[in-house]
Every structure is written in C-alpha cells, then in structure tokens.
Image (cartoon, rainbow, N blue to C red):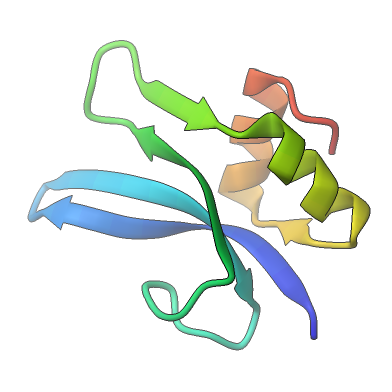
Length: 81
C-alpha cells in the first residue's frame, strides 16, 4: 500500500481549513485516512500550522510521500523530508 501525506479540506465555502493526514494514495481527497498528524489554517495572518513532527518523520521513514503543498509546509516548519 502506497501512502501519501496530504491535506484534507474542511471549513466553509471560501474559508478553508486543512488537516494534514496520512492516507492511501487511492483514497479520495476528503475520504478515508490512516492517521491525522496535524492541521494547517491559511486564513489566519500569519498562517497557523501545527504538526506532530515525530509522527511525520516516522511516516516519511516508512516511505510515505508528501504532496507538493505538504512538502513545502514540511520544509518551512522543520520536518526531515
């Protein structure tokens, strides 16, 4: 099973709020996930990010691939990817 670290969209129309989740790459964007490792709120100024870096690094070590957007967030907030 190939896993991805991706954003799962929540929130109202034009007010996005994202959870950073580990999911099977075949599942839908807002569908089933394996584990929740944090959240990202781009609507705040400055943007709010809370990640469990230990869990993220553990999943990266197991071979999970971050999406492009998550990869940028991880670089900015200190995960080893």
